[in-house]
Length: 317
Image (cartoon, rainbow, N blue to C red; front, side, top):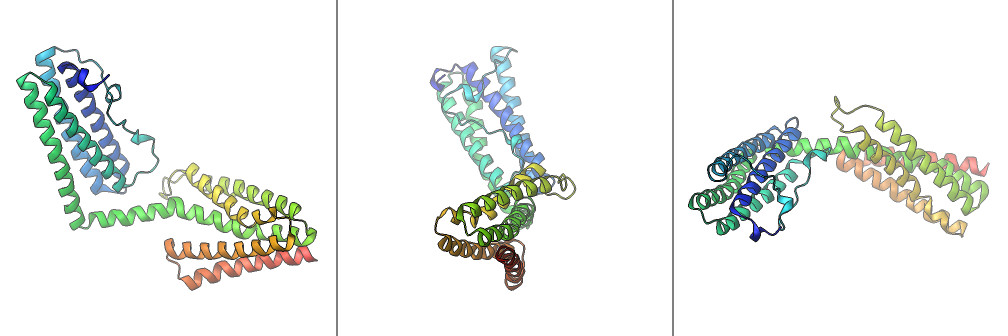
């Protein structure tokens, strides 16, 4: 239905369900952030309590004017509202994303109350809706003030550091392990097949099989390594998927050139791709793992060269 078609009772019913939903979303945010980001969790807990207060005042007004039965009319039943995402479905939640979502929620709530005032004729209803519009506006300023105070106290810096560590633990580490395994371990079978057969088609098949096989193996190994509850490494399924996909990608990078029929050209391109892969791995280790660049290059390049030589010697023997 259109907003303009709502009666005063329906406007109040929508407001009640909206405040209840927003309060639950803020509590979801707080629950997900409490362990790693206590400052943000405290902010969202306070915002949820504010939404509870709004809901109670709306229910009291509805009961005085329309009785005890409140019809279930949700935001998604009225055109123009943004559908709220189910925050509890997300495995991870970054505090800055939660703050951005909360800011949008407060702005939309304020706009709703400002529009609702124009549709209400009863004085008490107009007064409450107008008051709630102003309070939602103050919420935006209050949340910003609290954020600034937490930033001045160093809470947000600590949360930012914690978020970075969690990102590294849950995504970078499994992804890097997969990329290294896929890029390095598939070199030997790929180039052994290349120099043994001098056939681009056969080499491609071997590389494809090695890449997919390594991806499946690494994905299962990562997913089964730990459940993430004690280590803080997050959902094992997500880590397994990241690790498996990056392993496959690492192997496919130097396999795809063998789709070219010219064997020499394909091999030259594959070697260039291998060099780019090893350089990329070294940069990631330097960027996220705080490994000195020379040490990262030495570790990755030496390993890659040794595996390449093993494949070349075996294939040429």
